[in-house]
Structure formats: C-alpha cells, structure tokens
Image 1 (cartoon, one colour):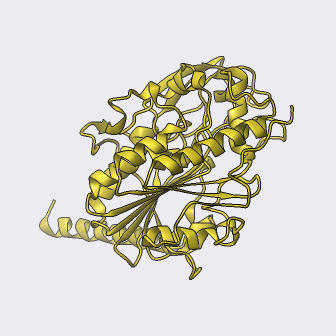
Image 2: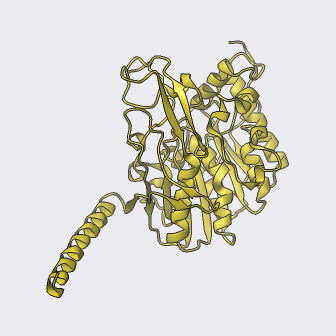
Image 3: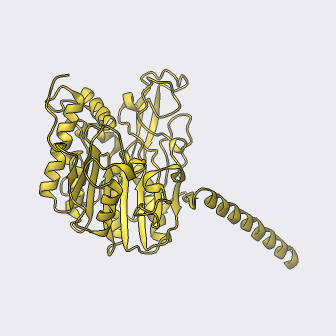
Amino acid sequence: MSRLGGLRSAMVGLWLLGGAISALAAEAAARGGWTRVQPPASVAGIDGARHSASCTGFPGTDPSYHFYTRKGKTRNLVVYFEGGGACWDSGTCTFPDGKLPSGVPQYFSASMATSVHPADLRGMFNLSRSSNPIKDWDMVYVPYCTADLHAGTATRTYENVGHPIYNGLPSSFPIRHNGYSNTMVVLDWIRKNLRSPERVLVAGSSAGGYGASIHFPWLRQLFPAAQISVIADASQGVTTPTWDQSTPGRGSWSLRLPAWSDPIGTVNVSGPELLRLAAQSDPLARVAQFSTVVDQVQAAYYGEMKQNYGPGGSCDNLAQDWNRQMVGTMVSHASTVPNYWHYLAAGSYHTILTSTDFFTERSAGPTFNSWMAAMLDGLEAWRNIACPDCLTALPCTGP
C-alpha cells in the first residue's frame, strides 16, 4: 500500500473512531452522563489472579457482562452493588427473574437483561436533588447477574424441577456463580481509570448489600488513605446455620471472602456475621445497615431457607421470627462494634437507596438522606437510630 493510501486509511479509521466516540458521548449525555463499560476478555485482578466477567449463562440468556461509570465533580467515589436475589439449589435456580405471570416464583437475576440502568433509578441516583449527599461524586455501578451475593467462584449443575413457563429448559443446566470475578474485573477498571479519592462510599441493596459488606476491604486495599464508608441496605444476613454450611445451600457458591475470613474459614462465617467481621477488620471504616422492621422480601428468602434448611428461630410466625433475629443482630453489633451504626425504619418495604424513600423516610427521626450525609461527613448526628420501640423484638403470637 502506498504512503498516500495508508494515510487515507488512517484518516478513515480516525473518522470512524471519532464517530464512535461521538456516539458514545451522545449516549452518555442522553443517559445522565453514565457510560457503559464493556470489560476485556480477561484481566489481572487486584488479588493477583486472572478473571473474566460473566453472568449465570442460564439457558436462553446472554452471559455477557458490563458495568456503568459516571464522572463527578469531587475527589470522592461511590461503588454501588446492585441487588437481584439469589439461588443455591435446583428448587431456586430453576426460577430466574423475568416477565412471568403472578404466582410463578422468581428468585434471581440471570443476565444483564434484568439489570437496571442507573439513570433510571431514584434515591441516591437522583443527582438533581440538592439534598443528595453524593450527587457530585464519581460513581461506579456494579450490576448483578450471578445469583451469589457478588462473591461466588463456582459453576454448579442444577436439575430442572419443572418450570411452568420455560418449557424448553433442559433437565439439567449449569449456573455460573461468577460474582467474585465480576467484582475483580470492576475493581481492576477502577484501579486503572480513577484517581485516588478522598472519600469512598461502598453501598449496595439486598444481595448488593452483601456485596458491599464482603468487598469493601478490597477498596481499602486500593485506596488506603481514603475515608471508607459502607451501607448495607436490606441485607441483614438472617439465615439458618444449616443453609450457611451446606452444599446445596450457601456452599453452592464457593464464596470468596477477603483476608479477614482466613483465620475463621468461610464455612464458619454465618450470614449475620459477615458485616460485623468485615467492620472489625477495618476499625477506621464507617459501617452501617438499613432495614425496615419486617422486610417482607428478606423474610421470604429466610422462609425458603427455614423450610428446606432448618431449623430456624423458635417463633412459628415467619415475619416475627425474622424480626427477632434481625433486631438481635442489630443490637449485638451496636454494642460490640465501635464503627458500626444502623438505621431501623418502620414498615415492611425492601431497600431504600434507590427509592424515593431515600429522601422521605424519617420514622426514626432524621430523614435517611440526612443521616447518610452525617455518616459521610463524620458528624455527631450519625448515630444508631430506630423508630419508636422498633428495637424491641416482636413477640411470638403463633403462625
């Protein structure tokens, strides 16, 4: 090829690249400044191992994975872990989320098709509200499609127990519980692309709250000088000991926990202890939980565990049983972990960080967003708070 021909080819390539960049910029502007990141096929994680990102690969779904970022105006960073259920045996893994009729179980998000674009969310992602304490922060949104609390490292084969809608589902199928590798891929991008922040908020809702609880020590490793804050939203860890220690059960995921778990062993870390042990491993971190008094979604998952991996608590009424264990955990953490705080609200709804309740919830006194702002600023207004009498466990009144 002549030099002139090569120059023309280069110019065409630059023109096409410029068009692609313009298209990406236009897409980002149209979606509230968010940019979608398609990760490379393989990366070297901050743990020193190679990792590839993937969703579950549930039959008929796309296993590809991506995440989102948004540039802010401050030297602060939010890393948010999306929620989306979980599955751990044939009975739960046969039923992913989807547009299904009422009455069909839906336990977990199987692919990016069920993920939500952060520009469509409310609460802490409403960046036009002046009372949003993180509206000017850099943001990384970590989608969830692995059914393992963002921390699994296993591929398991499950049996089709009889899905009433997915008639083409094979008699057995594999599920990639790949949440840990997905997290490592996201953290590798953060390491390579973001400047060192002064403050870091690691947050997540539901299954994502466990992701935040488990993985925030990795953010400390990346940014040792930053002030780290953690909010586990609607993820209190009420489980049964049998489920925690069984395969199938939590063992189906082969959870990978940070170094603080090594002396204990993953199988010996119970659900309620995940956040406590992580908080104790980093006394400088500010660690918090949010819940409503009777979170119906958390109670339903606990009911599944209690029914098939019992025994659970001594109370026959499921909501009361869940409440009594949740309150006991909150009270225990508050009395034994100096850097732990909670916000316990009235009601039975599930999650607050991506809801309008983020700005309006005040059953415990201050609005939740102002309480979170005090947490990030290290103010005295950030303290353990609960709605009136909500730290008194509900009595057992029967089924």
